[in-house]
Length: 342
Image (cartoon, rainbow, N blue to C red; front, side):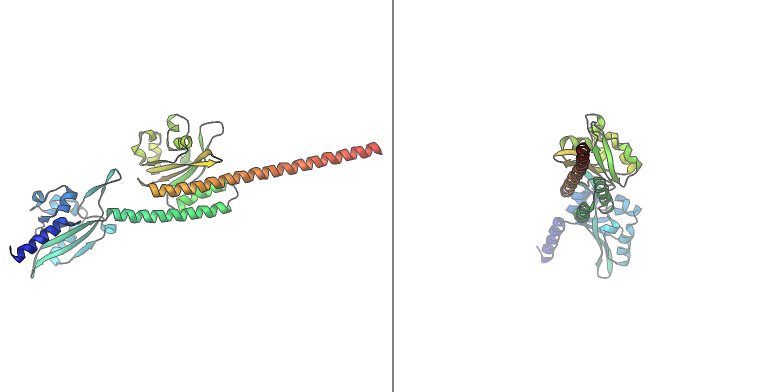
């Protein structure tokens, strides 16, 4: 075997084993190389696609006006680098993530393939950045949540009533964190309805939620189950769950796809739930839920403190009223004794 053959064999091994897609096109845009990575992610074998025009196999390239980068690379020997944030992808490849199929985000580099002064085609290198982008997006999201938690804790220090606490927390979750809307539902005294006590990002439509916590159809949703079990309830895709059918229409109308209900506990008793809805699917994952449960615990503690403070103020008021009444009674007795002795 000659040195050239050895180098060629090494090159084939490297191309086949790369964790990137390698596509080589000739000047007629026909596929002449389609490595194992491309076979794996496209489910098309090299022997089946070799010799075919890439634009005919993937008309999406033309439809999205991405063919111009490949054409200019070959015609003008000009390289291109396409960012996933702007171009998303060149070759439409789907991957499975969180029990659903999504389109792969790709970092794509296109290089002219030349031999001397002659252009022979181009080389397209595809790198999957889907997980990295989701991870970076998740970091940004978690950072916003931490900022929101800080603002809620500052709110807790300032508020003077439970109403202010709930309304302010809902506002922070929508304004600062970016959820679609948030609302607090309180258990009806002596009944099974969950009554909206505060909200942000939603108007009169909140009345259409019609949530209960009994064993009826509307009592088996996220809120009702959270009240009955005392545990956080999550749906990362409202339309996926048959038990949420009573809320499918309003979810579509209000444009939310994910929701969670977090129990609010005072003195060990569930008094209601803090409910958060997001426009996207698969929002409420482990790290996010941990943070939401932590801040809901802080809100619960603050509500308990406010209630205790209210009871203390009410007791003090009653004590002062009693003191005034007793003083008046004592003064009347003194007057009566004085008149009797006089």
